[in-house]
Image (cartoon, rainbow, N blue to C red):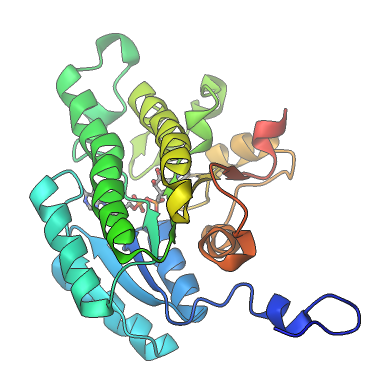
Length: 282
Ligand SMILES: NC(=O)c1ccc[n+]([C@@H]2O[C@H](COP(=O)([O-])OP(=O)(O)OC[C@H]3O[C@@H](n4cnc5c(N)ncnc54)[C@H](O)[C@@H]3O)[C@@H](O)[C@H]2O)c1
């Protein structure tokens, strides 16, 4: 493209975040953040595959995206902890939408049994630990592997974004959980969640180094606490610990995801982008 006399190539810059002609897969696409990621990607022109446990709900949400943004979108029922399900899901998407350019490796499990999930570390069961890591670690591995293989075969690069958490870096301040409730129960941040989210950062570094020669960028997106129905006591205590003085809103992750998905971050790989109101900084 011809540069203008400021040397800035303004036209090129204004298209930096354009995702037209790209296909994106979002695992956990029906979740609080997943739905926003899907909408943000479609709004920037991408074809979006919504991958989540419930096939019908994923298809219905994909249809809604198509109505709202006009790009070809599809639902893809998938259990990310099941290798066959993951391969079926990625093959179907690549075939229907002409390959895969962007992956938001984002699904995570809070477990079916919240009492077990939030149990104290000292009596935490190995069974519960494995149930969570089967999704949060094995699932990340399986989806990155299946999508990465498509990207390598396609030979046109790609961008993989993996969702971690501020608790993959920080230990929880137990004091903020006193009197806190969420999803009808008392809450904390279990060690299995921290360990699984730290694993995401390690997987990102490894894959960023391994796939850089093929133009496949791999980055971590690390959200801080997002407001989504916690009681006011929790919100106040959490907010008091954050430099920006509040919890995040689900929409506030979208800009970072689009940045990492698009050519705006063409020289960025192996990075961990915190969207946490500055919590990691002190
Ligand atoms: N919301 C937050 O405060 C927050 C903070 C830090 C990090 N995160 C991370 O952001 C990501 C998205 O979080 P969220 O708040 O949208 O979570 P969410 O619980 O609302 O959504 C998770 C989605 O993953 C899906 N899922 C669970 N198990 C699955 C499986 N085996 N196969 C396929 N899909 C499966 C669920 O059905 C759900 O739609 C997660 O990785 C989470 O750990 C969230």
